[in-house]
Image 1 (cartoon, rainbow, N blue to C red):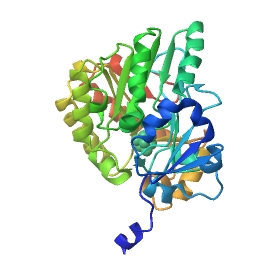
Image 2 (cartoon, helix red, strand yellow; image 1 turned 90 degrees about the horizontal axis):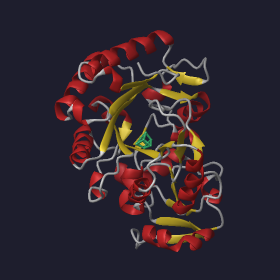
Image 3 (cartoon, rainbow, N blue to C red; image 1 turned 90 degrees about the vertical axis):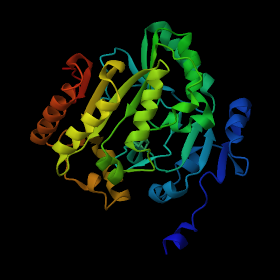
Image 4 (tube, rainbow, N blue to C red; image 1 turned 135 degrees about the horizontal axis):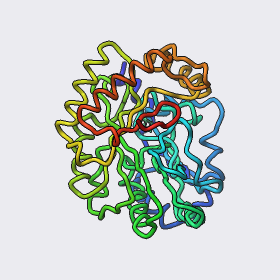
Length: 345
Ligand code: SF4
């Protein structure tokens, strides 16, 4: 029956919706389309005609994601959200070049944020650079470019991280973070590492990957990619996020950190961060409807602050324990903790 069910899905990227205005950005559009020679192209007026349609089931769509190419005509650069870490940087922003991700983590807030499971790529990346040019005239900028997707995982298709590396090289007042769970460092390994670009790998114990991170490379693959990036001179950050509470979490995380730092020298990384599970209450309501059987989403989180997270006692237990474990390997000035106030201590 499983095979029979699977046959009802379209193949991933069998259809590519292309906004009419992409014609004005032919080079990037054609570069992306060249990776899908057998896809059927469907012209559309605006990406929201497909992406924001009513009554979509993003969970079903994730079994056969399609691609939408669009032109961003709105804001490119947003102030960093309070649930994200600024790593002590002033002028913390994020940019959204892609919406949605080829991976499928049950705890991912994108499920609550977007009405569709399909991927959108904005092809007018040069306009994003132009917006940033203006902002950089006002002050230095710390910019996260891979929050609403996993750019590294799609780098073979877009080449966007390569373009950011080029932009970083000529804009020293900019610091860019590329967050990823991908093992696809090979897609950029031929490019010289700029000092103001940080590759941030999110690492999670096998228990979390097996239970909640679908289609995501395993821990060893992510560690190997991070090690390769370090060897190529890239600044590498390790993100242990989200920290989850589950039976035996102490021994699981203890073994996990030992394994990670046995394979990645703490001296070779820029810094580490960790933060417990946290999602806005608006998003978690939608996420719970989409995944009624998900243990990580149906947990009775404290929602009193407008953010679904562990209650104060459990939060303290988790944070103290994880900090203590990471401190066995990493000096305190390199550890960043999300505690709702971005405190580094
Ligand atoms: S890898 Fe990140 S962006 Fe992609 S589904 Fe998982 S949590 Fe979401």
